[in-house]
Structures are given as C-alpha cells and as structure tokens.
Image (cartoon, rainbow, N blue to C red; front, side, top):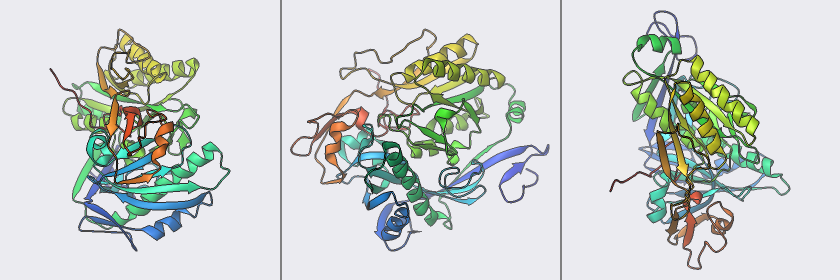
Length: 447
C-alpha cells in the first residue's frame, strides 16, 4: 500500500486506485450491568441507565422507557421483540452512528469501527403490526434463536398516545439505533481483543488480480412492501429504489438497517445486517476460491410489475459486472418466493449459475409445498428450516415485555400462552430462527 488519503482510511495501491479497508475491532463483552456511567472494564459493560433513558426521551414521541438486562442461561423471556442492534462506535473514517438515519450522510465501509462483541440492544414495545417476536435466553427457546447467546440490553419503549402506526414504528426503530450508539461509545478508547480486516479494491482491479477465479455476486433480497415492511439503506426506504450495487464493506459497517415487521423467524434484524453471514462467508473465500464482486440490494415488491422490474434489473447488473454466479438470499416468504425464483430463472437462462437461500413454509407436519413458487432452474437451494414447526417453551422466571402479545404474533395464536406461563408457538414467532442469510442455529442431519 502506498499513501493514505487525508482524514479517512482509504488506502491506495501503486496505481492510485482506492481500496476500501474496514477494520472491525471486537471488544469481548462478558456481562452487562446497569449503573451510573457507560464504560467497559475487563469485559464488563456498564450502562448508565438513567442517562440512556434521558437521551431517548429527548424524542417527545416517547412517553416512557424501561431498561433491563437479559443474560444467556437466565430463565428470561423477551416479548414482543422488534429489532436487535449491535452497539458500535466509529473510531476513524466516516461518521459515528447510522448515516442517513441517526447521523449525517457519509459513506460506510472504511476506517476503524469498534464493536461491543457479545452485547446487543433489543427493542421491545407495544405491537404495531403482528409480526414481532420472542427471545428465550434458556432452554428449548434458546436453541432456536441466535440472540440467546448475546448479553441483551432490553429497551422497552412506550410511546405517547395518538401516533399513527408508521410514526410509532419509526419512533421505536430510531430509539433502538440511538440506544446502540449511546452504549457503543463505551468502546471508543478500548483496545480490541480481536481485529477483523475487510479490504477490497475496485471490481476491475480484483478481477485482474484473480483472472482465473469465478466472479460471484451476492443478491440480497429485502422486504420493502410498505405496511411497515421496510428496509433502509443510508436512510432511504428501499421500496423506492431500483436494485443497487453496494461495496461488500458497506452493509457490515452500518449502511443497512431493519425497519420491517416481517415474520420474526426470517426478519433480518439490524444486528444481522451488521454481521451478514453470507457476506462474511463469501469474503472468506475471496481470492481463494472465488472473486467476490459486490452486493446487489434487491427490493421485494408486492406488484407483478415491481417484481419483473427488480428481477430484470438484478440480471442486468450481474451481466454488466460479468458475474459467473449469483448467491441470492430471500427475506420473508410467500409472495417474495416469486421474486427469488424470477431472479433464479433469468440468471440461469443467461448462463449465470445461482444458489438460493430461503426458508420453508411447509406446514406443521412439514409435508406441505415449502415455497409459493418453483422453477426447474432452481437446482441449488439452501433451506433455513420450516417456519411452521411448533415449539413448546417452558415458563420463564422473568418476562421482559408482555407475554400476552403471543396471541397476535405471526406464529402465535389465542390460547398459545398457557396458564402456567408455558408458551406454544411456531418458529414464525422466534426471532432469527430461520434467517435466510444463515445467521441462525438451524442445521441439518443425515439419516
């Protein structure tokens, strides 16, 4: 590397081509405590409870905030969960926060970011739509959600009366992001326990470096169907965009946030965007088995015209980039299955190989048609599990939120909460249980 551009970590090679270099410093968190300051000492994250409440209540739409902690192994249930966010702080390059949402506009994907690794901010609150979820920190429920393994700072938000559903959702969404920023600042001056480096030049340069490796694109489908089913890129509601190409570092550095209420099982939370499993796995193979070209962010629409437009545009971008293969992940199920198969068919017919990542809605017995659409071209499909699988979750010693919300969650029903506190529900209701970017605990077993 020769030279460093002023004020940010954009490295340049000998030809003067910009190389985005993102360093993510992980500070291992072993516990969360509530106190009078926000600090990290010896792996213990202390959060200024009253300071955080005061900060969030600067938004006049918020009536009350309750802060609590849920630790792995504790018999604690969190319900209804809206989003999960990883607390971070930008040390150099870019801006601190989520650009276009809680911070001024700036590009993500370069510089140094410190992460409180193992901690998460979990937003809880009154139901707006019916598709929030549950996290159990122990037992059967913990087996199904990846967020049973994180130390969770829960932020239970009560808004003022009279807000419309969309304003209500925005209030809680932004509050969760601001809470993660507030907590994340504790890691700014802490030496990380581990540093992950993500470095990649232009598509042309990488292709020249690895001329014999297959060129692979990641097409990430996002719920963008209105009615509180929205994803945001740099603060822009993705339902208003055409498929957009992102550098592979951008999503890992906070460019994408969840604002949606799809079924909890395959909702891609903000935390999962920040730690996208597909991006990390493809990055790990870059320069070894593949040439990872970038990410196409694909909006999922409800109209046939929207689906045709998005699939055609995705194919066009893949062809322009010279992709040999596309990995396509879905968000949600039902009508988005059509988008998934449209992209698959068009790419395969153009000579571009595809791998699909989805989950299944196969009925409680697992015998129903798993997807709403199909295609003979879909020969490489990875399943994240059956959303209709029923689990029985034993009574909790402590519930953060409102356990009766299960009656109106996707995957729950009236009577799902038994008198002794036992909860019966489909995986639909368990946050992250069948995540279609692979960020979950489900695996397969050969017989």
